[in-house]
Image 1 (cartoon, rainbow, N blue to C red):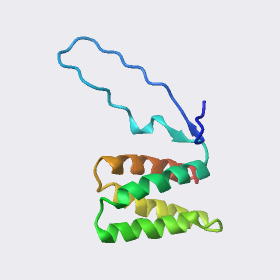
Image 2 (cartoon, one colour):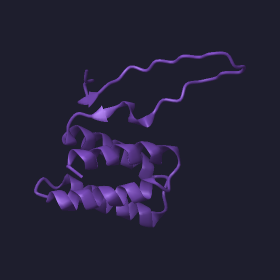
Image 3 (cartoon, rainbow, N blue to C red):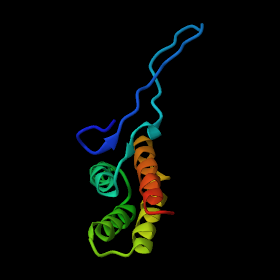
Image 4 (cartoon, helix red, strand yellow):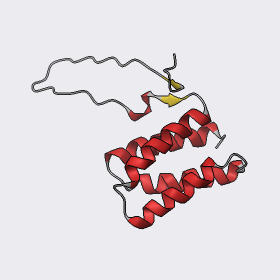
Amino acid sequence: MTNGSGFQQHHNTVNMHGGDGNIGVHYDQRTIAPVSYDAGLRELRTLLAELRAGVPEGDGRTLDEAMGVLAEPDTQPQNRRNALMAIIGVAATAETLGESVLSLARQLTQLLGG
């Protein structure tokens, strides 16, 4: 099943057995996966805009350069992979939003065959 953004959707099931003060549900970042590289790239662009605002200027430049490489239609797959690895490096040091970027960038790397 896909949503309107071209992402595959999965339903979550929550089972609780006992306990006190159970509050909230943790949703695994990997429950939504891009169906295509292009759909994932659109989502990544949105997430990076938010992430960029919360990282140091040097990391922001790294994200900008990597996104520029990914946006070029004639970029070789290895160069796309390198750009995604740069994004993964920055996202790995960021807080909560970094986790979403990290997960999506890894999924896009897999779609590229690596």
